[in-house]
Image (cartoon, rainbow, N blue to C red; front, side, top):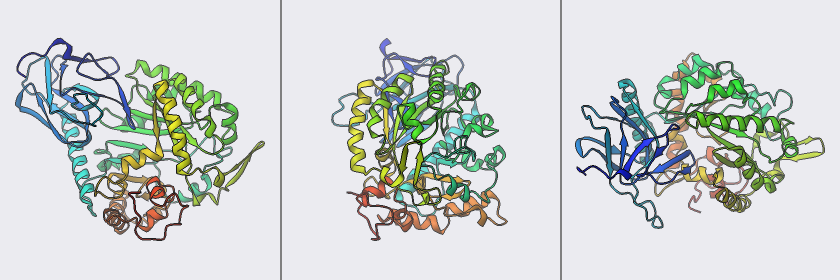
Length: 505
């Protein structure tokens, strides 16, 4: 590798951060966004006087990255997606040659593969360099603890889930027909104020988090400090994601998002204004206009934020799925997410049967079985492939990202994620009952309360059961979880009585 590479291997980064030239294969997508496979050998053009090279790399197998054929500058590649900040030190070369052992992804893929790459960032910030290295060390330790089925965690979860908003401009008039608004608002009593000051107090978790997600029952841009919260959380090495109903994505809000390392989910659930009104209100046209503007404007700002349009698949709108995908392709979103309506025991307070004009929404009848969803998924994937738009299926994607691999625990959520919500501390996204409620905090600080919960008896027992191949009672009561639904043959919540469920089905 001592000779200069052919010119076709010379790679730079474009205005939107994308690699240009050879050495990279065409753009692909996964559940988190776009990426490029590299060849086992590729070359980057180094901007003048930049000491550090930060790369967001992913692989399913460990390896080693060698820089300019110098053993003194090499980087160990861990399993999964991580940021790597490489100190080029006294290396003065303008062409940075990277060499990694070939990776075989699948038998049907004959390409010579190196690593998956999302971002290339050059910098001179030594503090940033150290921060990236600390984040990766924590994430690698977390992965080791998960694979070993550790009950008490030394690492911090790399996925942090928080609450930003408690108000919603739609729910203030009339909640969406499938929203458990009253139940959730009742659960929020006694919670601390989730503002910028509170988030600063979460720094021990925030500082090492690779991905921070808002799990509000509310509309995040309505939070008075929303732009400041975006500034605090989103940076080049940490993704911040939130869900909006789309009505608040006006010009002022969009300006706070442009160019930021964000994933914005816009929940729509219909391909037409009339269909949308059955579930929510008559703001469909305004939402589509806001979405078009965001997708247009972000092209001039590193193509950020990453925009996903969400569609909740139900009996009454399943016929709209392909039309929705086509509409979102014309709007210019990065990805379409199809989600399933969950079986929810908490809808009793809000009511399971609601009426919008002539349409009667019956919650229980709208829930679709996994077999029905999979049939729709195949048709939707074919439509997305034809248009060239990325599609994410939550009932398949969650199981693939969090389910068991080999002899690992049945689910990774209690190891990799920390849900510090204003409804309490939760072990996973499908849980509806907190393992620790804020009203139980007493004289403890929020940090003490969180620490006691994340390694407390309840989460220890959940981890212990999942590591032994058994779904604990908490999981068996969470009938909306795709992993549990599959293992229970899609039975309703509470139907599984056995202590052990075969998750290999």
